[in-house]
Image 1: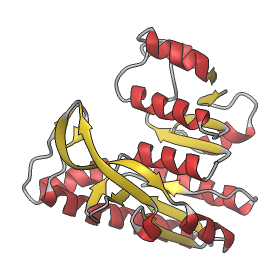
Image 2 (image 1 turned 180 degrees about the vertical axis):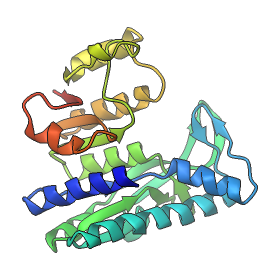
Image 3 (image 1 turned 90 degrees about the vertical axis):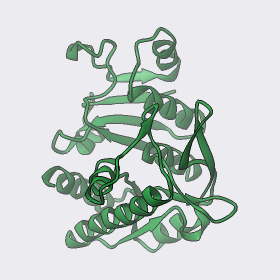
Image 4 (image 1 turned 135 degrees about the horizontal axis):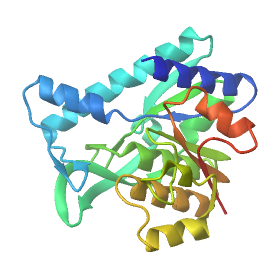
Length: 248
């Protein structure tokens, strides 16, 4: 809770000094907690949650709850926030995502982003807080990986910066050796690290998302340790930063 509050304080500060932040959040752990609460078993295939109709219903309820908690936090700090999901204004259109050919239920792959509602909110000085749920052409709801959603939205609004808050310090040349943290990573080197097999686990999709964002007009992507107080400010406003910045 304290970490969450600190991150939100920093985002509010960025807004107050003239940045136009957009928050995209997930809620995986919280969804698992509620799936357990109602006596269902969370299932994962290749690291992706299998989302049947019932799980989707819980996911949407939980994400809406998380969304409004973040809105409350921002409002309590004196900044106006509006919480929306990818359904609002038809922002996130999706199709069913398959995991290596396997059907994992209502998990969406974003096909189209319509950022109009974000522009409208930013123009009226609101801080948009987005939860990653989209609809397909039949208006069925789909859960979207939050990193994917953040990436697609950053591309659509031609964001200057995209920051991923994680629970590791950034990208390491050797994950077992903290001293190998890479401070600045051009995408050519990032691709080489992936090819040479240095990047594994949850970092692989993140890094691919980063490369994708940079190749589609986002200026810089930052991977940061959300557990470090003021990680966003330290990354943006100090020479060396504290995480990994991925750039052209």
